[in-house]
Image 1 (tube, rainbow, N blue to C red):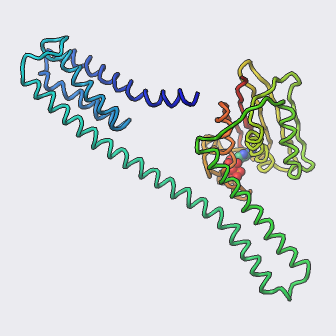
Image 2 (tube, rainbow, N blue to C red; image 1 turned 135 degrees about the horizontal axis):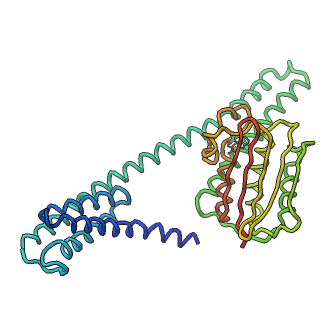
Image 3 (spheres, helix red, strand yellow; image 1 turned 180 degrees about the vertical axis):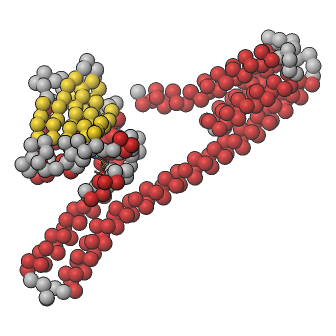
Length: 343
Ligand code: ADP
């Protein structure tokens, strides 16, 4: 399926280029009695520029060649043949081809430069975010250990332990960030190898809750998964990771006293699993962005996190052909809905 999608993306620009040439030819047909054919060439040049800006050099060159052929065939007398009466037109064709090629080369160069610059900007923003995330726990660990070394003799056992606990907590945090980063690169590179096996949804959710049992403590988790739910085909360890992030968020971003509800239902084609909490919720304008890398809602800054969890979940779910979305009413809670295709 991935392959056909890639093929479609590759062929699409050429098909649209063909469409552009077709439209320009139609326009030319309309005005050919009022305009000199050499002026109609401008329409085709426009098509070449559009193709170059939108898709780069390959489609632009194809547009140039197709334009010359269509121009000659439909708009230069004698019509509906590639022959020409007037040899001056041969000069027009050659000039058009040369101009078309130059325009397409220049435009696509500019396009590549713009893309490069945007990528560089994105990379440096990501690096900034990563270094900031790594630095915070590192500074804290170094500070705590230095305090311990400097005043070892003056501290009693309890104070020493408290400092060591802090250092351990921060090391755990560091570990989580690095693991998230590794997961992110693994799931993002597009080479995520998933090996699906049928799995019972109730067992699966049970395994998720088992992994989170320390965080869940005495919290009220309501599960409503019909017995007759069909099995879903998933890569267990990866999908577990995807769900853990979502359920962990529901726990993190809601008060301890509130309930979490996990429900499931299915249609002929898909299984739907929702995770609902009654916590802080997500502002409307952030709903579309929370699945982006490193994106954290401003108010979430006092809850620890890296902004990577949901983007990892999204990559994993989409690699299964599924989909994840969020709904929320601010102050009332959030619901995450995960769709998994039934095969
Ligand atoms: P983080 O490590 O910050 O939790 P995620 O990628 O898991 O990163 O989530 C991105 C952001 O989406 C969070 O910072 C938080 O602002 C918001 N968010 C995610 N889940 C919830 C939820 N259940 N309730 C409220 N906000 C949420």
